[in-house]
Length: 91
View 1 (tube, rainbow, N blue to C red):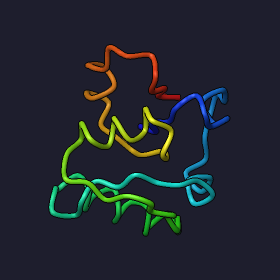
View 2: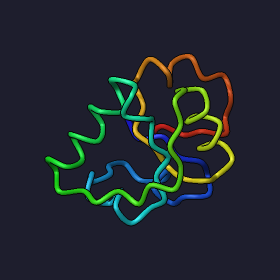
View 3: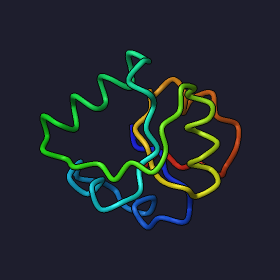
View 4: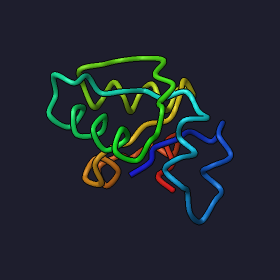
């Protein structure tokens, strides 16, 4: 699931092509975390060249960086369901 702040126009779209992520700053979960490795592998398989501006070991930090407008990310749907703020959009 794509996570982005209102700063990025992708939040207003009905659909996002995964290839569009290589045009945006990306907040990456560290590959030490199994989800981080899965995201990196998925993007590689889709020929997406991520512009990683930050690596972090915690999903909550990824979410906070996205909320601050530092970049976009791919996160689990469960994280979006538990997000009470309106600063991160999950288009």
